[in-house]
Length: 331
Image 1 (cartoon, one colour):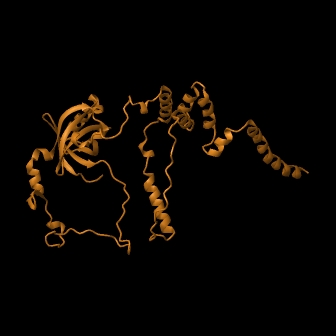
Image 2 (tube, helix red, strand yellow; image 1 turned 180 degrees about the vertical axis):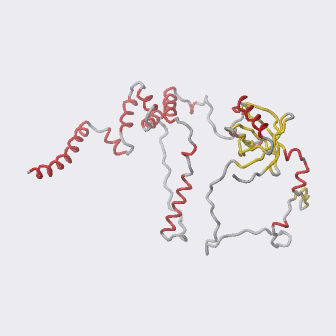
């Protein structure tokens, strides 16, 4: 486990729970280094004094707030702590609310909270209270130099603090061209909705997060290994001609697309499709489901009956060839 990045206490009412905060996530990003394309040497950055252009070491760097142009107030870590000692050392619970009242759009960054010395019982008390009440705690906490709104959530036996965005940090969607439910261009028929529901039901499963991983990162790493093996580590691949984006007609047959999608999913979704009343589209759908994904197979499924009749003969031919050596052996 990583080192704790914050120590303090959860406070609600007169109860104080000593806790330590730990990062709950780790990023597996592609760590790409900037290189000079002329000799592929790494590009570095220097901290320098803008007054005399000389390099500045970390030991000589302090933080300051620019209160007017070119004028700064120096603020040390102790200054930041003394500004409000209680705020910088306390997760102050303001209210308890139902979890579904906080939209996912507000959630930002999760942290694990572990009980500090002597805090096991009060930590467990808050955890079990959150669990039994079905609530989350809305709190304020200062991490580094920013005060965050946060949600305290019971996840298994751990209390997780998830920082929240403030309401004024959420951009309005008014400028986006989102179709309303009453818009004529976005009217959804009962049949389309029924087919979409069948597709969702067929694709529904238990949540197993370990089954999902960053396939793009894996593809890039495979490309790296391929270029190393081919001794192309200094080869710069230039962009080629972009393929024209696939275009569709003005009218999209959603029902046909949904039927094809359902046909590719086994189980509940396909069964729901079979229960539909037959019509012209439904008659074509089983052929799409039974046929392989390749377009050639789809074409074959729509051809005249004589094509289907030809299949047994094609299968019989290999059998006849296999029987010939057997006869020669017995002779």
